[in-house]
Image (cartoon, rainbow, N blue to C red):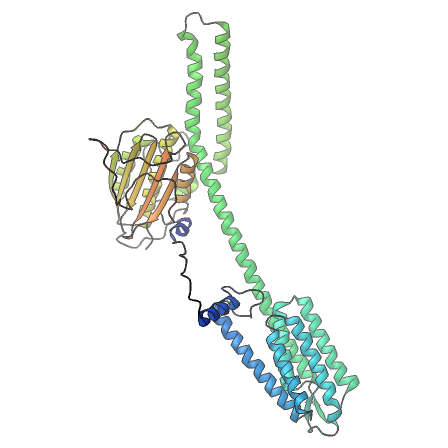
Amino acid sequence: MKPAAADDENDRQRRPAPQPTPAEPTTPTPSRRRRLRAWLGENPSPQSPPFARHRWLRLLVYLFIAYAALGIGLGGGEQLANEYRLTTAVGWLLGLVQGAVVVLAIWRPAPAWAASLAAAFLTALLARPHLATDASPGVGWPWPAPVMLAQIVVLALLALRTRLRGTLAAFGITAALTWVLEAPIGAQRYSPTGVVAIALFAVAVLIGTALRSRSEARAELAQQTTITAEERARRALLEERSRIARELHDVVAHHMSVISIQAQVAPHLVENPSEELRENLAGIRNNALEALTELRRVLGVLRSAGPDDPEALDDTYRLSAPGTGPAPDAPQPNLARLDALIENTRAAGLEVVMKTDGEPRGYPPGVELSAYRIVQEALSNVLRHAPGASVTVEVLHYPHGICLDVANSRPTRPAPPSPGSGHGLLGMRERAAMLGGHVVATGDRYGGFRVTAFLPREGTPEPTAPARPSASGPDPEPDPDPDPHSPEPPTGEQSS
C-alpha cells in the first residue's frame, strides 16, 4: 500500500542508508570466505562465466566447469594411452592439458583456444605413427572424443567473449588445421572425425555468438532505459521550473506595475517638482513598462511550451480553489486561500484538520504562493496514495519564515492506480529551493507519511530553528526528549 506522496523519486530518500558491518574476527575461515566472495564478485564482470548473474550461480558454473575439465583430462589421458598407444606419461599429460585449457577458457578464452588447438595438433602428430601398427582399428583421428569436447567448450566460451570477427577467425584456423591433418598428412587404420568435428565446432560457435548478441542487446537496452529515465527526470525538472516561472510571472508583473504607478503619481505629491525629478521619474516609469512588456513575451514563450499545464488538467486528484484554475488570467493563490483549499479537500472525502501557530508576518507574494502550492500538492498526494487517511495540516509562523507540515495517517484501503504525473515532490523541492528553503518527505513508524517544508521569509534560512511559538506566556523550555515527528521547522538537513 503506497502512502501519500510516495513518488519514485522519494523512494530513494526513504530507503535506509546501509549500516557499516562490524569487523569480522581475524580467523582463517572468515578470511577465506571473504577472499572467496571477493573472487566471485558481487556483480558479474567481463571475466565471469556465462549465465552467471548471481554469485551463487557463478559458483555453480565454476564447479561444473571444473568437474567437466577433470572428466576431460582423465578420460582423454586414458584414451590416448590405450587407443593411440602413447606412453602413459605422454597420454595423461596431453589429456590433462586439454582439461586445463577448459578451465583457462573461463577467464582467457583466446589463449585457451590457442593452447587447446596446439595440444590437439601435437596429439594427432604423435598418434599418427601408431595408426598403422599398434593402434586399434577404427580409432577416431585427428579429433579424439575428449579432445573434440574440450575444443567445443573452448570455442563456445571464445564466441561468448570475443567479437564475431575474432570468433570466425578462430573457427577458420581450426577448420583449416583439421583439413591439413586429415587430407595432406593423413594416416592409416583410423575413422576420420574431421567433418563431424567441424560441424560440432560450427554449432558451438553459432550458439556462443547468438548468446553474445543477446547479451549485448540486453545491455544496450538497459543502458537506453537508464538514459531514458534520466532524460525523463530532467524533463520533469524543467517542466516544474517552467510551471513555477509561469506562476511567478504574476508576482513580478504586480511589482513592476506598482513601480510604474508610483513613478507616475510621485510628481503630483511634491509641490513644484524640478524638471530633473520629473525626468528621473519618467525614466523609471518607462523602464517599468518596458520590463512588463518583456515579461509578457517571456510568459508567452513559457505558455507555448506547456499551454495551460495539460498534466494538471488531466489530473483528477489535483485540488483547486477559487482563482487557482488553469486560466492564464486567474490571480495566483496565497495563504488566505488555504481555508478554501481545505474545504475542497474535505468535499473530496478526506478528513482534514488545520492548525495555525503564530501570526502571519506579511510574507512576500512568492513565499505565499509557494506555501499554498506545497500544501495543495501534499493534499493531492494524500488523495492519490492514501485513500481513507486522516490529514493534519499545520502552518507555523516564525519571525524568519514559515513552516508547513502535512501529515497523514495510514490509509484504510488500497490506493487505485494514480493518474498523476508523479513529480509532486520534485515540484515541492524546486519551489522551496528557489526561496532558500527545503522540503523533507518521509514515512512514519505507523504507516503514514509526512511532508515538512520550511520557507524563509527573505530567501535565506536561519542557521538554527527557534522554539515553537506560543500564543500565551513565555517560550517553553526545550523538551529534553522531543518527539521525532514533531512539526518543528527543519534545520536544513535532509532525512535519509
